[in-house]
Length: 258
View 1 (tube, one colour):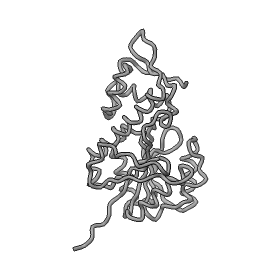
View 2: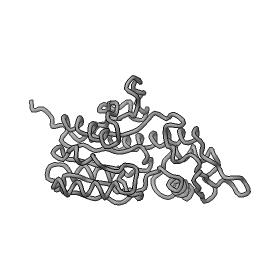
View 3: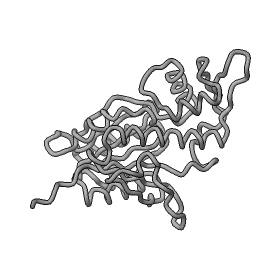
View 4: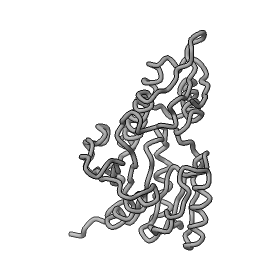
């Protein structure tokens, strides 16, 4: 009996929802509440709760779309070397093709390369996605994976984010080069531009996906809250319940960095 060809592997980069360690750029964000009430200010505990809600919504979206049958899911935790791996998100825990690993490397570029290179030893197509995308349309993921699959015409697929970075990278096995992730000014508006320059340097064909928004900063959270309040875009039930419990979905949101 022939051995089945391994499908794609999606590596979800995330952290445990520990106050002060996650979504720190959201701390100080202000969200408008009911008329006449003061704005809700996001503190460290609220930022951690948002992180957990984002991860839960993303995991449920992947599960509902067939993760575990269409592709392998690997959760890559950013934790210390001696810290036990956290439990898998419950929305993913029951899937047959899901596992967890520890991120390895001194910066994001090293961690991305290490995780994707390890996945590429088992899978012909690999991708990395952060957990800051509770409303991610799975069609974008499928488009990226198809673009770099055999016959897809690309070596690399990139989902540009509005802040100058990227929210998704998918690679054919042959394109998992360390150079693609080294010397990049991570967490700046130069990430996408520098990565595209690396692709040109390495002779890699690129498929660009539609631009999307990370939920990293105060204005990103305000925009997401506004979309949920107006009933626009994909629903994010955990994030919606959290924001509704804070009383911030009844009015258009405002944002201000703390």
